[in-house]
Image 1 (tube, rainbow, N blue to C red):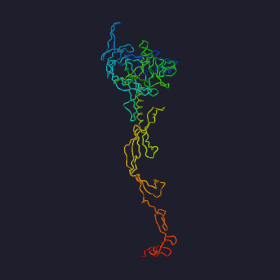
Image 2: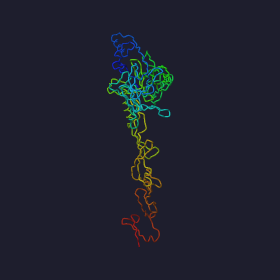
Image 3: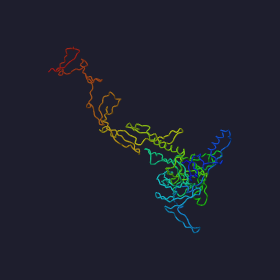
Image 4: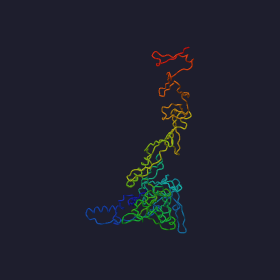
Length: 549
C-alpha cells in the first residue's frame, strides 16, 4: 500500500526529510496550538506525578492539501509547457526553444529556484534536477483491462529510477519513505504465480509527463476490492469525482482528532491524498486550483488501502510538510542512494517489507504437494490416474494470521495408466500404456510396458469366471484367439459302463449277472472264455476273458 510518513523541512539539510512522528521541526515546538499528542502525554504523565492534572483536551489542528511544483520533483518530462522561454517585452516577445543539454530553473514550494538539465534517456526527454541522474526500466507496475478484456493501462510500460550524486541539490525536494510491493512478472512459481517484487526506500517526484498536478481529470487506477484495476478518475469537477463513489473528501474532526468523511467514515492519514478539484482544462482558462484532502474507496464502501497508479505507469504518493502544514500528493520514483541511512525508514516500512517477503514465501508454498491422488478411470474398468494436488493459491491470512489457500486444479501432467487399445486382443500380448494430461487437457501417450499374454477359460461361448469354479472348460482364449480342449469330443455312460462323477476321473465295467456286462450272439460267446481267478468264486471275485480260438 502507499503509506504516508512525516516529512519535515530541515534547516540544516535545506530539504524535506522523513522523521519519526515524535520529531519537531526546527528542533523545538513551543506553540500550544501545535503541541503534539506525544508532548501532551508526557506533560500529563508529569502532572499526574505531582497531582496537578486538570482537564485539558487536545485541540489538534488540520493539515490541508496543496499542489506540487516542478521544482519539487527530481525529473519531469519535457513537453510544450516547459521546452521554451520568451525574451523581450509585451508585443515584441521572441520564443526560444531549449534543446538537449540545456539547463533551466524550476521553483519549489518555497519559491526557491533549482537548476535542471535536459537529458535524453532511451529516446525520452526529461528535465532532471542538478546532481541527479535517471534510468528507464521496462516494467508494468500494474495492468488494467476493460469489460472486453482489452488492455487499457498503463499507456507506457517503463518506470523512472533516479540516482543521487555526491553533490546533488536535494533542497526543496518532496520525498517520503515508501515500500512498494508489486507482482514480479519475471519471477514466478512453477505454476505461474507471480512472487512479490519489493522496492523499499525513499521516493521522490518523477513523472512521465510535463505536469506535476494531480487533478480530478487525470487517470487514477485502483485495485477495486482486489478484483482488478479500474480507472476512477477522468472527471470534470469535484461533484463528478465524488459521485463515482470511489473518492470522498475529508475534514478534520477537532473533537476526535481524526480525519473523517462527511458520512462519518474515519480515514487514517496514511491513506490521504491531496487532489485538485479544478481540471487541467479549467486551469488553462485561469480558474484557480482547488486542492483538498480525501481518500479513495472500494466499490463496497471501504477505504482503499492499496496502491494508486497513473495512466503513464507512475505511482501516486503523499508526503506531509510540517513547515507548511500541508499534504502533497505526487508521482513517485525511488531514489537510489547507497549512503542513505536506514533511519529514514519507519517501522511501518519494515512491516511492509516483512509482509512482502512472507507473501512470496506463502505463494511459493502454494506449489507444495499436499496429496497424491489415485483415481479409477470414470465409466471404465480400464486403468486410472495418479495426480498431485497442490496446497493451493495463497489468498491472504485469516484472523489469527494463518495463511489461507484456495483449492486449485491438480498439477499439470497428471499420470494416466490403462491398457493399450489392442492389449490382449487379436493375438497381441497385454501392454500397459502410460501417459500424461497436457495443458490442453489431452491424454498424451508417453510409453508402454509389456505384461505377457492374456489367457481366459471358456465354457461354451462364454468366458469362465470365478462363479464357474469346478466346471469343465471347453476351451481357452489366448490374447483373444480361441482354442478348444480334448478335440471337442464328449463321452457318456453306456450299458455296464460307469463314468465317475467325482474328481477320480475313472471308468468302470459292471459284470454282474443280471445288470452288468454280458455278451450276445453265439459267435462272440464261443470266442470268449470267462474264468474266475484263484481267489474268486462263482458269484464273486475278478473275472477275465480269454480268446478261445
